[in-house]
Length: 285
Ligand code: C2E
Ligand code: MG
Ligand code: MG
Ligand code: MG
Image (spheres, protein in one colour):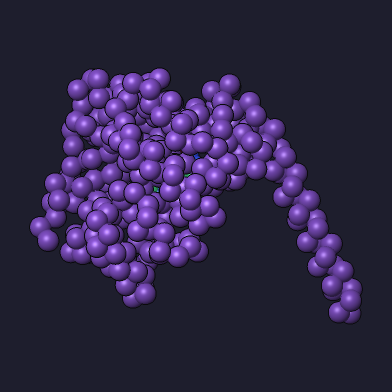
């Protein structure tokens, strides 16, 4: 019995793996033409300063709308892009589009807002991200200090020297750097003191549960103190309620981002928000 159960489980398992592989191959095939077919779009989510209550920037987030597959979330297609070599052409489109958009907003005289773009950690290990990003800044004419690159903590530890060198060159050129999903990686804290980053982004999983889970609340508090002691700014992502906002104010978090302020929106909507400002109780901590 145990043997046949084992066999069934094995068959089910290989069946699932087959499906998963087929799905990835299908995704990869479709993704190949996505840039040229104009199926990619960027949406922008505001970042707000708790001290001033104003929008200080936005994060560009990638959307892929495929005629048959529908809206494919980045959590699904970014890993496929990373494994298949499509990450560079896609990232190229993302960074160029985001820089052109930020340049247009600044040229239109809108309040200064930093444009944050996500960089795949694998990309930084395999390519010369500094040269690439500085090249696109040059082409698009965006002021380097209006660009921020967000890099997840995972994989950084795999090549600290390369990451440190890349960060150093970007930082020297004036580009801002932040560590995304902070607290979820496996790397040690010791690398932090070597990295010339500007901001730590507290992962949304801690923020989401900070009202109900004392452990998550403790991590949020600790990351804010850690960031400030290392002279970094700190932003909380995934802020969904006024209560989250209030607690983060109290703990002197610098900035927030999340559905409480706005979901990621198309460029036109973000522009309106930038023009009109947002309603937010100013932090009086
Ligand atoms: P991330 O950079 O940590 O982005 C935050 C994610 O949380 C986004 O999901 C955003 O839509 C979502 N989010 C924002 N506020 C809230 C909130 O209040 N509640 C909840 N539940 N979620 C919120 P999204 O857009 O699906 O992106 C997922 C991840 O995909 C990103 O995580 C990032 O790692 C990656 N990604 C997105 N765009 C790009 C891109 O252009 N290039 C690369 N390399 N990665 C990207
Ligand atoms: Mg991000
Ligand atoms: Mg994040
Ligand atoms: Mg994430």
